[in-house]
Image 1 (tube, protein in one colour):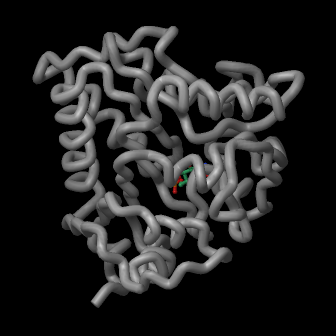
Image 2 (cartoon, protein in one colour):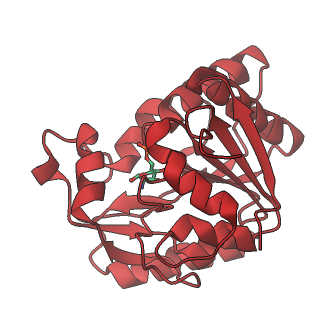
Length: 246
Ligand code: GLP
């Protein structure tokens, strides 16, 4: 099996941000009440900046857009420093006219996390499923917080983070040791239910894992390789991330 989905390669991360933002904003323009799946991570900071700029320029409203974020650290309060809710407010939600009631994020501080995850799954289903899911890529191949070894049919749940992933997320906190050990994340199965998926990867550090995905060999050690099973995936890469592709 080979990766039969679409691959787009750009000169640098700036061009990647421009293209991804264009797809994002055009999708909202086409379907104002679209349901988006959103990631966090460093890769998406310039993308959200460009989404804000472009939507203002094109006068695209987010008033009817619904969003579901992929994941959240377990044990953090909504909006707390380091939380993905804080990241999303700062980078996107505070800067567009999205309605608070249309933003869905896992509450990392929920007393009953199993219930929180089940309610999240049901909410996605009830609203009709995610139309367009944006994804970043972990250097270890994770999508959302589905670390290597995650079942491809997994649903939203609590997961233990690897020390490597905690280190890479330290930029959100004062130190790597402050990064929570657990997170709540949509499962791989939840992600694969999205109608369309866009995976964005930039930089040399992602090139090895990008090659593995494109090779099309489904491997539980590389969660993102599950994307080969989806019919409508686009990879948006910069040259560095694509450097090992023939
Ligand atoms: C993080 C997040 C993912 C993100 C990925 C890549 O840990 N849980 O949603 O897409 O890892 O992050 P970055 O863009 O910083 O490389």
